[in-house]
Length: 116
Length: 118
Image 1 (cartoon, rainbow over the protein chains, first blue to last red):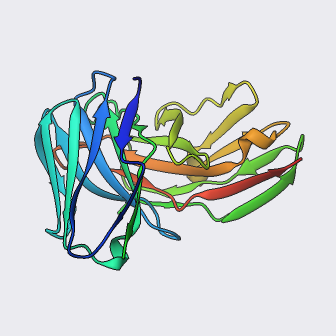
Image 2 (image 1 turned 135 degrees about the horizontal axis):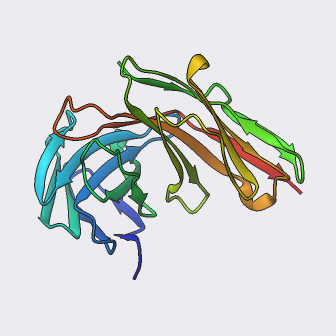
């Protein structure tokens, strides 16, 4: 595998289900990100991890729970979601979170989530 | 506050035409970075270019070129001789280079959907 992989690619879940999204990066990067992409809306940053430490929780509801067991893996645990949470969830990684320079991000293909 | 504007929501061109995607940004910082990403129908965003605020040289990569103008706060992207495979959503993004938080937050524009018709 190369780059950033995400599983599953598609997920349909009921509002009472619990599921997890998985992301793995094969680039040796130190930073990982979760984004939400809804129709007609800009990309929304959800969480940022640097060396397994969460450095940003961008006002995300607690029904989304991230986990970063190591710098290569990132999970997003989902429970009691709402229909408005239906979106494309994108994982990304970057070399680091330092600001000089600002590193580009490499994205996975995303998980298309539908909440019924 | 940072802001990225991509005024063109959707553009359609006929194959082999040139097309320019506009990006205008707002920031009060003197050190910042600009990016372009491509999102094909498959979903993943693909990094195209990074530019820092101190480098105003235009860049060309094959059929792609970028025009960075600090005076107008614009970072426009031109595709020459467009092809069907260029059909995608293109995002312009901005990040500040000065530490204000513990990480470098990237703000994405709303995207421009480009359709290249054969």
